[in-house]
Length: 74
Image (tube, rainbow, N blue to C red; front, side, top):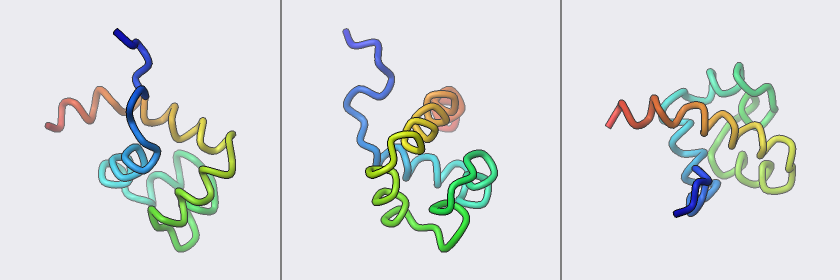
């Protein structure tokens, strides 16, 4: 069994779930990157995050910290 919480989860799914849970306003406060604060969209954010490893890492870490809250929501 794989212990990696991100195993099999796409960046797109991570971003969509975080955006649905927090909204771009809060995401921009939690992770101060332009793709969340200036004209945010899932598409433009994905483009940026795929090219920017440090930003992707921050998003993945936020997702891991948010997973228990996402599980409770269902």
